[in-house]
Length: 145
Image (tube, rainbow, N blue to C red; front, side, top):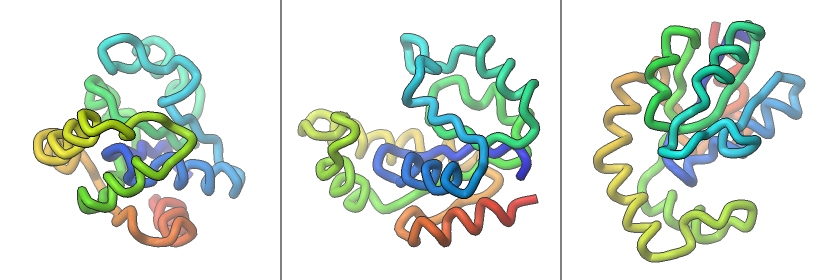
């Protein structure tokens, strides 16, 4: 599989999709964990550059301010999306990530869907519906050439 970035709002299913792709044997990096992000919600550019230079077959997941600087190093940028009510339901129910449990954070997610998701959509090469079963999403990513 070529280099793929999976991006989208909190609750869209990025981590779940990444876990399925890893289970299927693909090299994956979830940039929400492992100190990939620096203060200001940006990737560590040196570290991300090294990852992409060293791996021609990696699936990266994340949504940060400077991700667009790396788009030319991915063969595909996949926007995983879902309606805002689905996102809110998911982030309030999850137990592996505390983000989204407060009213202020949920308001922030609504604002991001309105203001940030259109920017992600413009940079994406593919958009997938995060409400689909994870196996179907993983199949769709694996079919990207």
